[in-house]
Image (tube, rainbow, N blue to C red; front, side, top):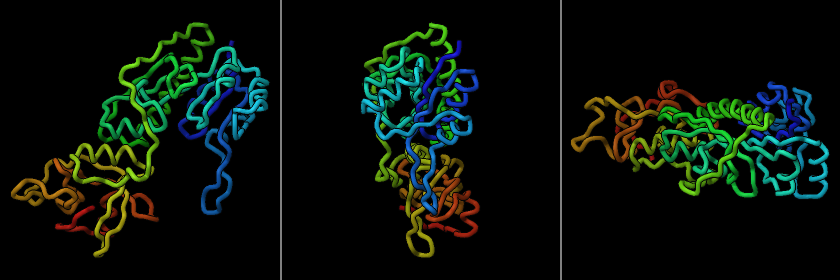
Length: 320
């Protein structure tokens, strides 16, 4: 018999799971999400992606500012749900809420726990050079992503992947994984495994102060830094345009192989940050990257070819 569930989620990442749970016939008693925030030129209140989808599906939506009050707990219990499904909700669930449903609260987390507990697991996995990540369903406890794990799905991280690419891959995998976990829960067959105490890492929230590109790092580290912050907040550097440094976000790049002799000096590649050819190959401390997509302040993202048509850059230009 399908379960009666509370769904708790906020960003676009959570939408595929909501759709999968509904599509598999489970009853959603209510959707909890963050309150609308002002956005856009007119600063109108913008409902979260989860709220928009829930209202389209005709599911009641709640946007409490706290879950710690007795009133919030009473309201949560009044839904008489069997369990709660939590995906990037953005609020801490206090212990009384965790205990308020008979089967518990189950969270979808975008890493292979215990690696990358915390706020920014997708970004941190790319930035750290990880070759693999995944999604896990865990039964929540009071700790930060410390609950017992029910199921996992793995996926490789390639050097070509940006945070946006990996986000979309994991969102799709996560929706499928959660409905399989809820199906096993419904049948009384969901098995839980305690997380290891070994290999614990924390995915701290991304700070904008981390976003400046350091060309003094090896090419692959620079690439992973750029891709781990793409599209938001966006890794940036300053490019000399018409004699003045202009801040530009780099959104996608590749290791620059096959550089001609024009891109070489007697000592090998140029100094870190030096432009090596007229197609945006840039020297790093070891190797070079080629910029494929970038964005000037106040403008839309553009391919490198389009950027160069309007802003031809020639050696010996240097990015900083």
